[in-house]
Image (cartoon, rainbow, N blue to C red; front, side):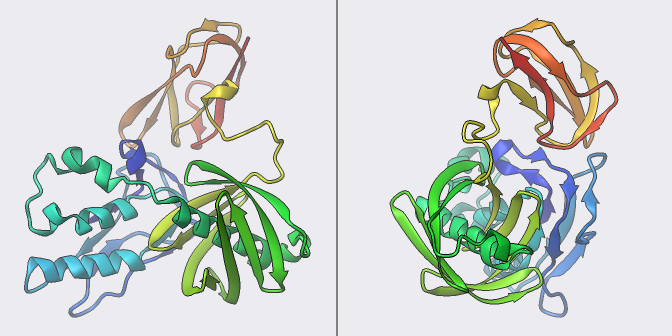
Length: 313
């Protein structure tokens, strides 16, 4: 089974960037064989194949081998960029795959089940864990702590915007109210890269890593990318097409630039192309308007999420 730096929710688009935290499952007789080049702090480059690890299981039956793979995947920590870890786990759990009935059409036929987003309660718990880590554990947390008063939290968690309020209830605990859900979190222990939390009464070890405004963690068997926008301008919203800014969908090199400042463009019009991992990715205008700013040139290497150009009235 191949662990890759790619985003299954975006048609498995390759990802590149810095690996903030990483760990592989145990290997040895009766366990998995793991081949990887996963080292925390290193970057997954945009120039080559996006595979970062290979997990191989052997068992007396298909079921035994799949159980070993499933357990091994749960032990993998790859934080800092999107991977197909949770997608692989969903494939293993699927009954068609489990009995050996998967064909080359398996993903297309069962895509909805394999990519089912987590429910609101799971998101709320993961968001609460993220807020607890940032306010109670992360460096500088004491300065950010709201000292018992409710504090507005605006988060983007795995692409979805959430708003709520956090209240620190003790030196090591808080509650987060998000919509209809209120989640209580207590920090039991903080070891480097792993925090032991009690979330709604259930204790778990939560691998995590912070990178600027982003916090990456695994909780509830899933990986989460959480961006804290609590201090951002209220009208800035979630990064998207409506603000007229075109952002890089992945890290790559600008190999085609079809527009200049002052050009009038239509929504959907191809504007530039990025090349990454031997593939070209066309970027089109998010809206009608005039190009007011261009922040890249032909040949530039850009990071995923970077603003490439702006379109105004």
